[in-house]
Length: 294
Image 1 (tube, rainbow, N blue to C red):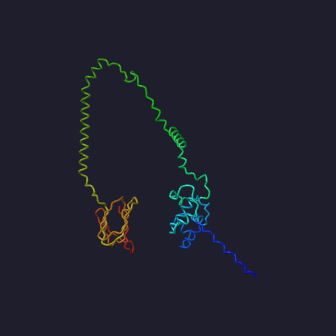
Image 2 (cartoon, rainbow, N blue to C red):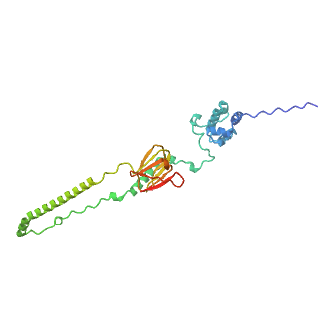
Image 3 (tube, helix red, strand yellow):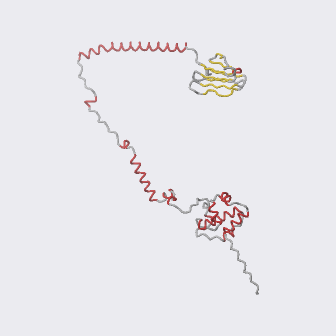
């Protein structure tokens, strides 16, 4: 019986660009998701490249740019990988700068047209300018465009009232009584001036007799010999003081009366209100004093 001839071994499948990239990534123990995060590229694009499904990528130029970026990240020679990829019909790889980070979509839609692209057409820009000008003219206030009516000038007969001429006898009487009227007016003016001077002197004397104004310091003074938590709230609800006062510190406050005061360490706190010392009475067995100053 003749010896059986063994079949020749099957030829290995020729390597592809995706196979080389996948083998290099797996040899470094790098997951495809981690590689996509490092490159800031959608994982679906890397999977399509490694599986040689170039039809799922935008074009051949994009596939070559993505393959070159992956080779740079894996620190391998990109020439064997690029030799197995088809060349793009457009520009070279140096012009594909932002294509790797663009959003990946399976099918373009009508909503993908950017509003800025519409403004690039000169005809549309002219139409928009015309519509804007019409809107401005339509909403322009009409009261500013219509001038106010000019009232007619009064006639000469209406401008000044006409009085009948005075008789000679009445004119002479008026001239005779003029000095008396002037003297009466001067006497009344002198009396008014005297009364005003008297009132002014009374105001000055009242100001001089009034007590001196209060100093700039507030009516409430607090001094501590030990740490004491103090809270002061005025009648308007404003918090004038709410903190721990250090030993030896003096605080002067001023606000709308009445003032509500809470002192945490009454034994080590001295309170003065309007220049008079205030006796602090702790509440119960605590060292806390509560008082209201009016």
